[in-house]
Length: 376
Image (cartoon, rainbow, N blue to C red; front, side, top):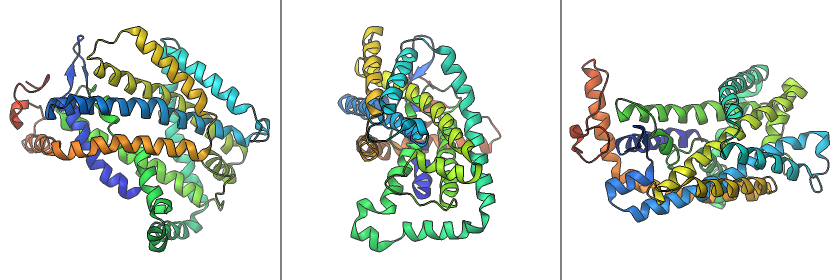
C-alpha cells in the first residue's frame, strides 16, 4: 500500500492537473470536467470518454456504494442487538434506513444533514488518527515486530509466486488503489471544479490527499490493528477487526467510536459518489440532462445502497475491485499518453516559482492556445 501510494501520488498529480487544464466552463462561470473530458479534448475520442463515464457510474453507484453500505452495517455486528449474523434482520433494517436517508439527501432534502456531517468528518478523521497514535504508544514494545511482519508478508516470494492473486502483495495493491483512488480517474472529476490560478496547484493538492489517505490514515489503522495482538479470522474481518483493535486499548468506547466514524464517513462518501455519477451522466448527455433522469437515477442508486448492506464480505470487496480495475485500465493508459502535457505545465509552474511569482497559467505557454475553455 505504501508503494502504491508513492506511485499513485504521481498518477494523481497527472490526472488532476489534466482535469484542470481541460476543464469546461459552465453557465455560471464555474467549471466541471474529469477524465471523460480530457479524453475527448486531447485525444478526440468521445466514444472512449463515454465508456469511461459508464464505467465510473457503474463503479461508484454500484460497487463502491454497496461496499460502503456493507462496511457500515458490519460495524454493527459487534453489538448484542445484531444477534446471529446468519439470521439477523439488522442488515436489512440498517440498509433500508441508509437507502432512505441517501435518497432524501440526493433528491434535494437533508442539506443541513450534509452540512453537519461535512463539518464533523475532518474532526472525526483527526480524532481517529490521534486514537491510533495513542494505541501505538501503548503498544510501542511490539512495533518492531509489527514492521518485521509487514515486510516479511509483503516479500514472501513463495506466497507471491505460488499464488500471486492471494498474496499480501496483491492485496496491498488492490487496497492501496481503493484507499486513495489515484489513477482510477475519480478524483479529477472533483479537481476540475476547483478554482486555482494554475492547474499544477490542484495536482499538488491531489498528491497531498494520497499521502493523507494511505500513508497517514491507513498506516495508522494498520499499526493500531497489528499492535493490538488480535488475529484476523473469517469471523473477524473489516470494520469489526478495527473495532476489536480499538476496544483492546479503549474498552467499549473503541467500538462506539468506529461505528460513529463509519457512519459519518460512509454517508458523506455515498453522497459524494453520486456527485461523480451525475457529472458523468451529464457528459454522456452533453449537458442536456434534466432533473427527472437524475432523480430517477438517484432513486435507483439508493436501492442499490440497500442491497449493498446484504452482501457478503468477499462479494462486496471483489465487486468493488473488479469495477475499479476497469476504470484504471481506461484512465492509466490515457494519462501516460497525455502525461507530457501535465509535465509541461509543471515546468511552467516551477519556472514561475523560481522567479518568486505566484504562478498563473496560460495555455499558450505549453502550446495549447485556444484549445481549452479556460487559461486563454
